[in-house]
Length: 234
Image (cartoon, rainbow, N blue to C red):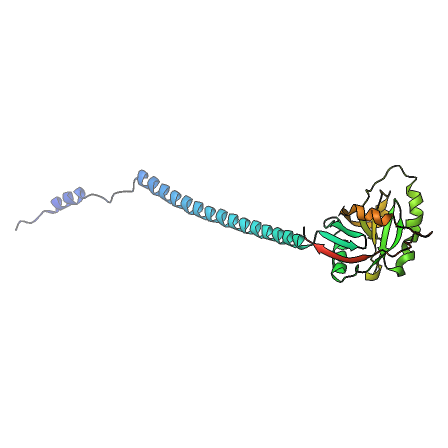
């Protein structure tokens, strides 16, 4: 077997290829792939965050709508009308649930306790007001009902309509919750009464009560009273 000379071996080693270097195109391509991968991960994270935020927002909106619905249901549960059956006939009163909620709640509670059952009309002032209440509370409102009648005739600008229903202002217990029904516009009515309703049916009955004979203190000569008081939704 022939031996290869050292010079030939040197020439063969020179002919062997040196390790190839990574080209700039390859580096650029790999970098682009890394950038795309990072962008994809970022987009996925962002979309999930947005979706989660939208879901939370929708959940909060649903809860708010549910709360509003519950409030509306509670309001709808409150009776909107009261019917007074008087010795002259029935009178239907629309209750102002929104403008006088506390007084309406108290009125409803007293109706359910039959507070107004058997209550008498204590004072009847023609073309002014009729009052029903407890005889023990008769003196508390005498000044404004009697003096106010003459005072009201001097005012040209009337702020309130007839057939408004209210109770006297001030702290009171259950026995002192009286009723007033105006039979004519009264100036500055809100200074004297807390208005919580108005007569929507039975105005003729109110006018018939207004026409009864009274003494010099505007007290009816014959008893007129509320036989019963009931509540209804609509």
